[in-house]
Image (cartoon, rainbow, N blue to C red; front, side, top):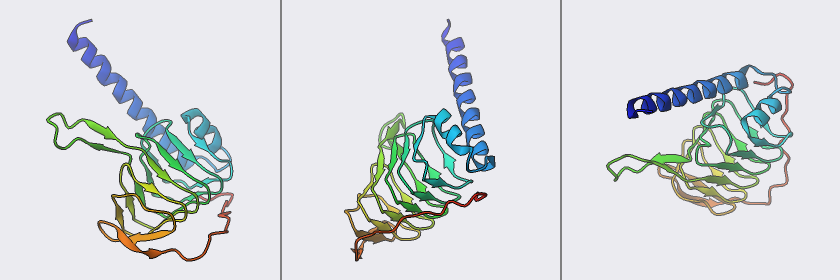
Length: 187
């Protein structure tokens, strides 16, 4: 196969993948909640049955996504799972939050992809419009305030806010709630 034919085949393969991913994102918004687990299985996602992923979420890759028991991910959230994304149990992610796991090597001449997984531990809270950048680990019970841009890991039970996010103080009390907001026709 010539180099030109190989390049064309590679280009077609990439286009087909992204068309399939667009179909997954569209289907996720249209499917009723009780059919979504079948889509997750086909996509290679590990999503707990008690987790709620509302419509309007955007996935960036097939696979590389784990969501724990009773976690709640609201509409408009970007789940960039290209570099690997693990979300624990009882995690609350508000609308329009963005979680990124892949950037680019800005100092290299090739602008190569630079994946770095994100881990969000149990009882963490991410409020509306916040951004979590590649490589960040949110510890158990960590809280990210609305609009914050988190570029560094957050220790357990700490609250961060701002751009870039800075430590605001401790989260008081031990979380004992269960996020049980599964509404039949919620999208």
